[in-house]
Length: 266
Image (cartoon, rainbow, N blue to C red):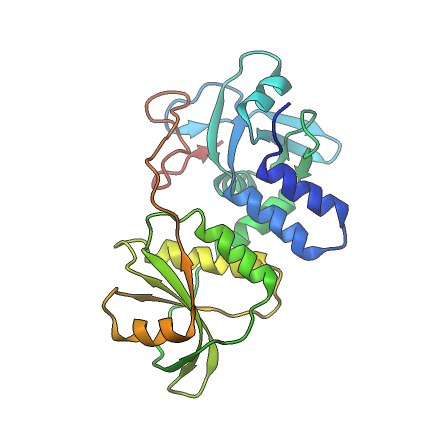
C-alpha cells in the first residue's frame, strides 16, 4: 500500500467538508501542479498525444493517475501513457471538450472533472497578472495575512527552488497613498519573473480569499529598498534548486515534459 499522495490528501480534506470552498480550491490547485500520467490510445509520434477516451454517463473522459502504479492497476496490461502537468492536461482537454478522470477505480481519490470544470480551471490558470508601476515610500509589518493565503504561498514557494534567493513579505504604503501588501523576490534568476508573479497570483486565487490583493516586486540583493523591507517584513525562504530528474516517457522527446513545448492533444 502506497503512502497518501498530495492529491489523496487534498481530495480527502475536500470530501470531508463538501461545503468548504477553500478546500475545494486547494484540491484544484494541487491537481494543476501535480504530474499526471495520462493514458493514451496509442504511442505518441513525438509531437501529439491521443488520449484514450471513455464514454461515461456524464460524458467523455480521458483518464489520468498521479502514480504510475495506479495507471498500471487501471489498465491491467501494458499501455502507452505520457507524463504531463495537470495544468497542461486541463488546458488541452478543455479545448477538446473532454473531461478528465483522476485515479478512477484505483484509489480513494477517484474523481471526475467534467469538461466545464476543466474549462474553468484552464481559464483560471490562464490569468495573467497585471503589470503596474508604483513607488513605495514606506514598509510596515502589515498585520496578519489570512492563514489560507500564507499556506498557499508556502506551498507555491516550496516548488520554486532556484528561481530566487528568497522572498520578503511586508505591508507597503505607496506614493499615491495606497496601502497594501508586497511580496518581493530577491535575486530572482533572469527570465523567471513572469513565472514567479503567476505563481503568486495562483496562490491568491486558490487560497479562497475573496477580493484579495498582493503586489509582487523583484529586488536585487543590493537594492536600497531591501534593507527597509527586511526591517519590517517577513523572510520567506525558497528551497535550494534540485537537479533536474526528467523521466523520458514514450521516446527521447516525450511530449509534456518540456514546458516550453507543451503537447498537442487530439
